[in-house]
Image (tube, rainbow, N blue to C red; front, side):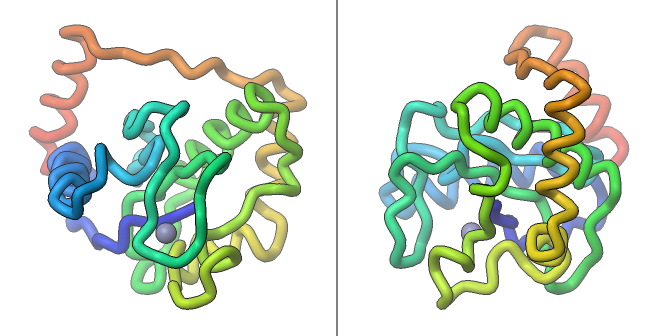
Length: 166
Ligand SMILES: [Zn+2]
């Protein structure tokens, strides 16, 4: 788990911010957005780097074999919305089932790289106290929602409507 460390004034800014993160990561010489998925403050999931490509971090650990998701926000400054937490849990549950990884293996970035504060206090708190892992287990028990990639006109309209709320 990561956070983007960007405090957004409105959820409607999330799609533009996702494009900015991607542009910034490309400018670092990385091949794409650092993360496989982003989850915004409404629980919307954005596809980032293809899942079979190793992610990137600006820190000292090797993320080979890791599923990198980032919560959009700056969680040492702000709280974690319940709907965003639910979106993270659903996505992580899907990944745990799809890639046969026990939910107990989920970690925050700083567990691998102590020099960073990522994923921020509010996200790290739900990792450290077991809330996120327990929500993953509940989602798995309910039957995991399948991730469906949407890149049609309907998706464009959804993003346009979201951005109109900014
Ligand atoms: Zn991170």
